[in-house]
Amino acid sequence: MIFWTVLAIAIVLADQLSKLLVAQNISAVDTIHVIPHIVDFVYVRNTGAAFSFLADNTVLLSIVSVIFCAGVIVYWVYKKPDSRLLKTALTLLFSGAFGNAVDRIFRGYVIDFISTSFIKFPVFNIADIAIVVGALLLIVYFILSDRKEETNENNVISGG
Image (cartoon, rainbow, N blue to C red; front, side, top):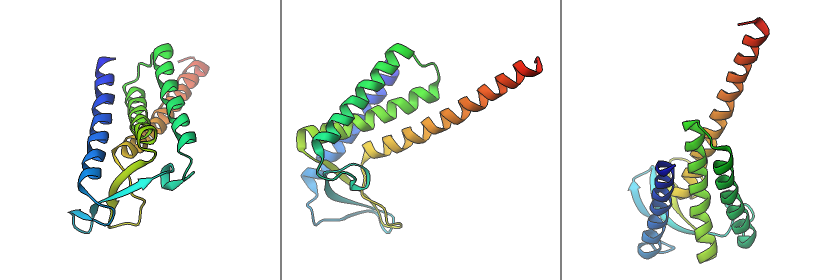
């Protein structure tokens, strides 16, 4: 449990530190070309969720984030997952939701700053990356779990 807690704290700290550095060093009109024609840093205040969905609903999104984080903690404590893949997915999802919730609660918006130049995509942050990777890992976990259950059921049915 300590490893996962330390990982969650490290992700939240990296997210919050990067947002603080952006807020202090990049103005709304600046663009920093990190990798020319691939990745830029810009300063965007996002009052919504992914792709600015539910823009200007900061209170609702804050409540949903806090409930989600509490749900992950409750699940972890009571279900005690043993899969490393599931633990990784939950840690990433929790960290991302927590990092963006901190912004919403204390700033009234989420700081996004990573912009892809090679593809038209909304600006995002480290917490968003954690959420996306965590969600993808959770999908992989469910797919693998379903396959494992099917194999076990087939073994029982065939007498194997």
